[in-house]
View 1 (cartoon, rainbow, N blue to C red):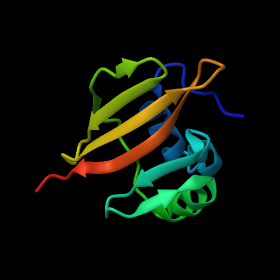
View 2: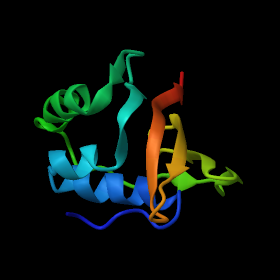
View 3: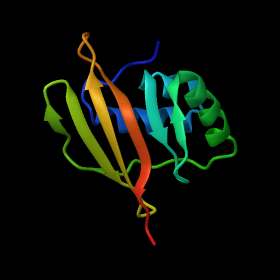
View 4: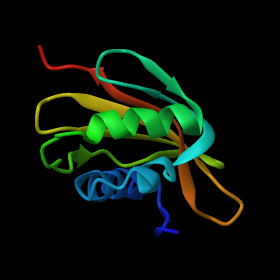
Length: 117
């Protein structure tokens, strides 16, 4: 099992590493089983099976990803709001939840809530 996120902002770093390694299962492991991801086109992907199918397509022929500039995570109890400004100018936002083991998983991931015009 790949290393998990010990801090909510670790999720973005792990996402970039695993995407660049074309590690579909490692990407799926960053999300809760019933997580929702909204892709660049506004399509909702729900649950581990759909996430897996999405990441197979997403990684096919994809160029190397670069980590964006992350804002400090905003935390409340076991929830955290994370966001990143990406090199293409898009902004992503995510909601993560802390698991009982102390690790963090994404519950909601919006790839490009704000797209550069």
